[in-house]
Length: 399
Image 1 (cartoon, rainbow, N blue to C red):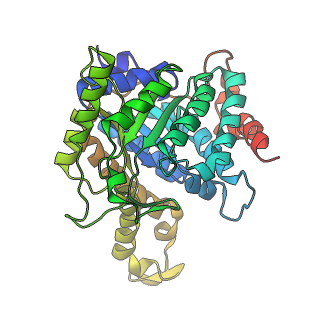
Image 2 (image 1 turned 90 degrees about the vertical axis):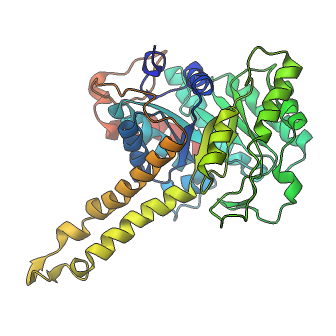
């Protein structure tokens, strides 16, 4: 029985997410989680997943949501509205790619909890109408706080998540570097390594509520890309976390905890392999895919510079038009193609390539499933989606 026999295509939620992570942990692969800031970057991830025959996690950050809604929008709920907009886009197109997709929100520090609250409102509105949440999972990153406060806040939010079958990811220990306005470049190096006791304390607090959660345990991880030797990763420590949990739980599983790897960009193949070996089922990637997107555009401009100096006039003649070169669909596609290749590299490194045979069935916009069905005629147009449920959800955010 293959993964495609137990996990459906399109955006998955609830137990389907857990089934996917269980399969990944058992078979020894992890799923790349790529930060997206536009429909273009999201589509690149979906296309990479289809090409590689792999599941994919599309995630959006607070800054990504703010960009998606438009940088000129200064409303307090703008980031949440932008994240909802991206989620609605992915739901409108995901099934056309024939692979399973997890919709996830990235690092939410304590100061960003109002953003999380906005997304929870959107999930509640979507759940009430469709019987499943808008997003598959959310991440709380309270690692800057004390362990006690970190875990206590996670407990309260996990209670809300479990009511809607939303997976939760949390972080214990700090990922170094800087990402999306959270700067940990000067953090105490000791805090970059989580202990087995810290990880198990999270498990003890969350498991009475539910089992749909994962832990990003720090093992020297750093956001961004740094010169070799500047970062010391110790992914073997993850094996210690699993062994300790197995002992304390008397679990028959060798890897009883779902683990997540942050700061994946720039990591060596050996480091990634060791992390996956010890139960990492998700690895974040952002910096490398940002560069790949830009690099595709850079190469296109360099190759076609003579055709990009004006609307008319190029080496083929002073009266020759250049529209086919400056049309955004051309150079944005060049950026996407480069990003697609890089996402597929991550899938190779994480061994998720070839784990899911894409469905040959015709796709359809995916507004939800469960309690209610939607008129297929209405479902045909993503624009109608944006004008119905998306409007309803976003209006609940920006009042």
